[in-house]
Image (cartoon, helix red, strand yellow):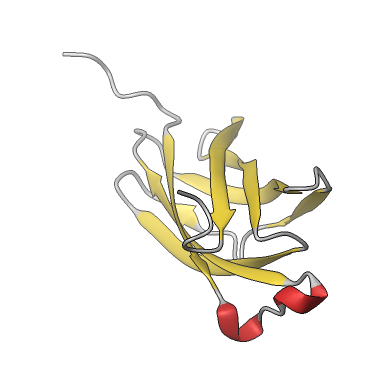
Length: 127
């Protein structure tokens, strides 16, 4: 039987276009995203900071760094999850986000949980 890694944070992402807050005529495209962070490791861990790279179709990159997520620094025991929603504003109808969460486990080890690139796109635009 293989031993469970101490630090194993899984990140799932769901995205949605928010037409009510968008104004395509003004190059304003608002997207909501819901993140589920799950501790699949063997040690409890606390999310300290986040780092995002948000890229629009023109290649413009917004870099976002900050403490916690939505004002919280969740402490996740093995098997626990934390879900939150936030948003991003792009100047184009298509873009992408990627990044990482920085965490510390209960033994004081700092580690990153990468967030794989995901697409933000107005529905029906891509075939």
